[in-house]
Every structure is written in C-alpha cells, then in structure tokens.
Amino acid sequence: GIQVEQSPPDLILQEGANSTLRCNFSDSVNNLQWFHQNPWGQLINLFYIPSGTKQNGRLSATTVATERYSLLYISSSQTTDSGVYFCAVDDGGSNYKLTFGKGTLLTVNP
Amino acid sequence: GAGVSQSPRYKVTKRGQDVALRCDPISGHVSLYWYRQALGQGPEFLTYFNYEAQQDKSGLPNDRFSAERPEGSISTLTIQRTEQRDSAMYRCASSPFGNPSGNTIYFGEGSWLTVV
Image (cartoon, rainbow over all chains, first blue to last red):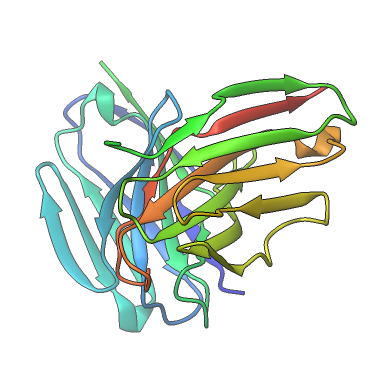
C-alpha cells in the first residue's frame, strides 16, 4: 500500500512563530487531506488538497502532486494550534480508504 | 445531527465480553467509515459503507469484528470476545457522496475502548 511520511515528528514553538509541516507520499493520489487532532481527541478536517494551494485564515497548504509531497503552513501560531497534525491520502486503487501518516505533534507555548 | 455522533465515548470491558459501538453520521451522508486509532498513531481503516451496503471490510482485523448499517444511516461496530489488543479508539466518519474521493470526510469524537 501507499506510504505516508510526515516530518518533523515533534515540533515546539513559541506563540507567534511560524511553522511548516511536511507530508511525503509514495504514489500518485486522488485525495489528500490534512487533519488536526486537538488535545481533547477531536479530529478536524483542515484541507482537502490533492493538488494546488489553499488558504484558510492563518493556515495554508500546498500539494505538489508530481513530486509527491504536501506542506501545511501555520503562521502566527497560537496555543490553540497545539495537537497532532495528520496527513492522509487515498490508498492506491481505492477512492475511499485513507492512509494516514503518523502525524506531527505540535506544542505551542505561551 | 450537526456532526458525527458516537457512543459510548468511553467503554471499559472485561476480556471475553462483546461490545457494540454506535455511530450516527451527519444527516444525509451517503458514505460511512470506521477507523481504529492506537495511541500515538494515525487512524487505520477498518470498513466502508455506501448507504447500507458494506463495500469494503478488508481492514477488519479478524472475524471477531463486524459492522452493519442496516438502514443506511446509523452504524454499529461489534467486537466479539474482546481481547486486550482490541484496546484503542474507534472512530466513525462520514462524507456526503457515494464517491468519496474528493469529499471532505468528517470524523466523530471516537469511542475509547479499554479491555481489561
């Protein structure tokens, strides 16, 4: 099956700092989504972005499908951004089965 | 409902007991998924429904696990003769259309299962 690698595994920031999270995947995809798991365990969809660039407030994401990677940018980070960020892609011939990376644990300190 | 609702949120059961986890998807959503998430890991696919049809159950670990969605809405994931290795968070998700590729997928808050 498809492999999804996220980096860095852990990241600690001071409030107000910017960060870039990376997701590499091993095969072409039709579906790529970024999720945020907050400290209470809720898993929230941030972006559906199989290609191109999207922005939502302080967050933006870019996927370069031909080079098989996606980046999630967080600007002016806030303590509420803390949690685990997951990248997930569709698994090869399946258009419904998402394969998740292991995530990036982000801690934003006040 | 406004979001995907799961119950119970927390379940502690003794080894060997059966458990049933319930998922109420977003109203009108065609696709429903079950995932399992171990501590420190991302969710792993278990099974997928399109309306009431279970179209893929390849992620179910063994025959102790089963799922149904009889009326195309609420779904139940059942684990028979639970074992300690079944301890995890079980997440349900739904998406609007029958072709989920390209759809945003919405996850519930999960059911934490602990087998003692």
